[in-house]
Amino acid sequence: MVRRLIVDNGPLKKAEKNKLAAESMYIMTSIIRYGLSGLPAKPITSDDIDRILVCLRVLAEDNGKVSNIFTNDCRQVLGLMLQEQAEFEALHTKVQKKKNISAQADDSIMFNQLVSRMDMVNGEDVFEVSLSQAVGFNAKKNDTDVSLEPPNYKAKPRSC
Image (cartoon, rainbow, N blue to C red; front, top):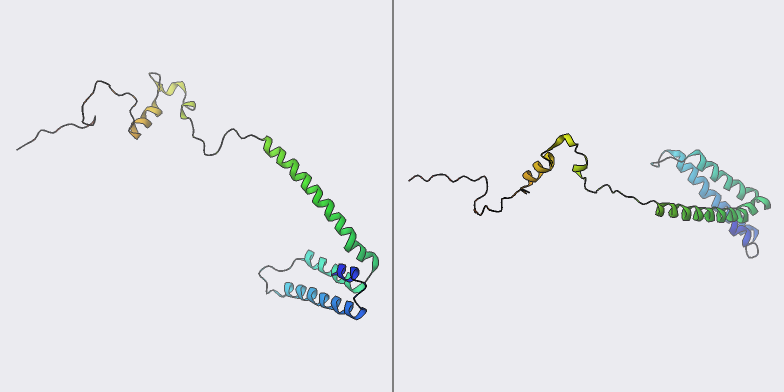
């Protein structure tokens, strides 16, 4: 708003400037009143009120130095902040790329690394053997067994 009042100095008459400033001030005070009323889900903070009040003072006083701060200096500082943020993000992404994660959360766990030598029976891991039996994969198959019956199936004698 301040920028419009200052930059468009030529075509706007004094009465139009006052009307535009008054409308802006009315909107800002309405925002403050609504924020303090208790109707919004999140009430307005004191910092927000202070910022709006500063803007109201700038519009009411029509001071050249303060207007210059709002229009020029704030723009320069914002540009510097954005430039610093871009440099920080570029540096931060380089650091993130250098970090190489060797293990992922969903990698499988090698249980044979966790087993001590005391838990080994005949050089075999008891956990691995029981897991393979539970799944149905028996690592020790007898190649000479050609029967079609499952290994634990016992044929019952038929009765007539």
